Image (cartoon, rainbow, N blue to C red; front, side, top):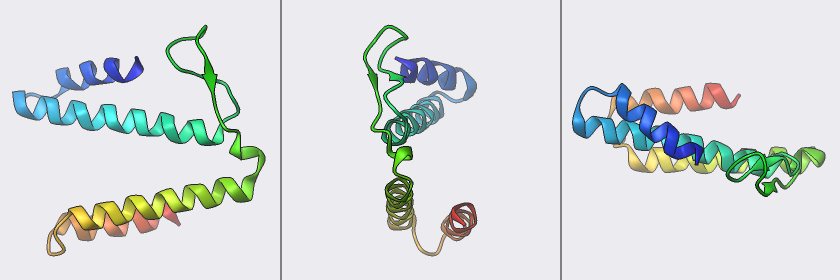
Length: 105
């Protein structure tokens, strides 16, 4: 439900028609993926559709070594996907890779 709201908000922000949907989809995907990652580490307190709905969470923060290992794995996988998707010679890949390493550290 929240993703639909972010999709609508992002669509208003972007001035060009095609770019609006691309920006909106990226923002909605970022919000959704953040929610999925939160569901891994939070105790069961994240509602699916609203306050009265089913609440989810695996509670990995209670097992910190496991939580850190899962988050490190997800970070490495994300960096690998990024590096595989962006051509090696582009400035974006070089800057993106540097930024990812700095943020990860």
